Image (cartoon, rainbow, N blue to C red; front, side, top):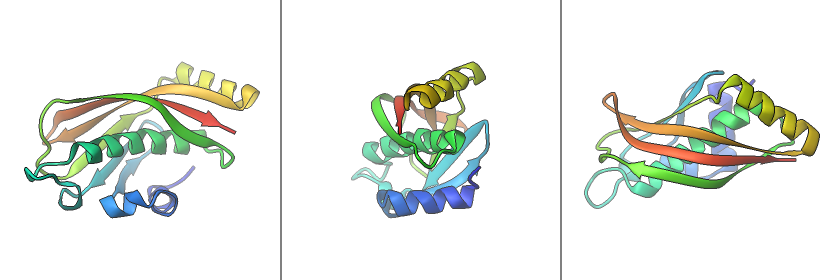
Length: 145
């Protein structure tokens, strides 16, 4: 499986916006993935995190976790739909945490992808600041071959 360094390089190469945002892979394993980005290139006129940057980082956390877990270079992962709830402003570093889906859910996803060449799964992520949830995200991701 991809290391945090390899995943970060992949993101910067394939999705140039991640470089502009300053996205870094802070943590990645089989249970969760954490992406961070500095406030400066992602701030709004109020000097808090821009909502679009928060949503982008949340989407990227789900995309990255799924890419790493699926571990299939022939897969194309896209976001199909999403909802986001902004609970409080983010005034410092952006930190998105996406937890892995349950084992049965991911096994079903892998099976569908192997049989049909297409599968969908719902992932949830949060943007945290100072140990509190600032943003809640839920997205449906599709893997295609």
